[in-house]
Length: 169
Image (cartoon, rainbow, N blue to C red; front, side, top):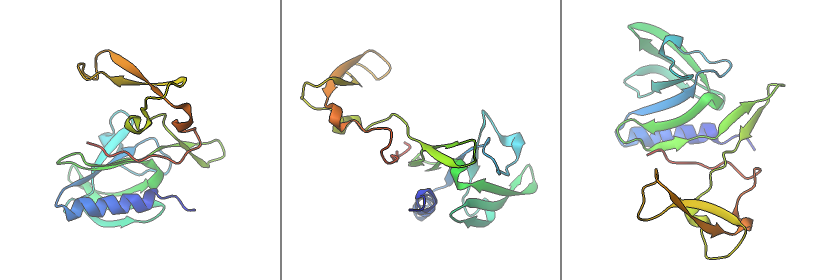
């Protein structure tokens, strides 16, 4: 099957616009074939406003997102391979989608790197098994000490599972 990221990107973009919000994309600025104003890159990333009033000539296909935009009053042609897009979200409320990281291998092929993040609520059970998931205690904040609950090892996804999607809040 073809990758689903370009389809999800277009769908979330449309959803954000339909809700009268401003879509922004977070881009890995170290991705090959990327054409963005490097003076706007911070910490190897760039955030771009892709609202229809901020850009022109937008094209979102299965390979890349391209458009024209002004940076410091100068029109620039932007080209972003879909695999360089790390997230799309509404700037007003942060709702959107984070995409799995992509690892470019030596031969130029792209391999998805699936993060070791699991839906902890669906995994926590009363079974006494060998796997543990650490969760914040109800009396403590997430930044403080945590308590551990048993999780069945057969429910922990392996590295070869499908990529997950996470809503940015």
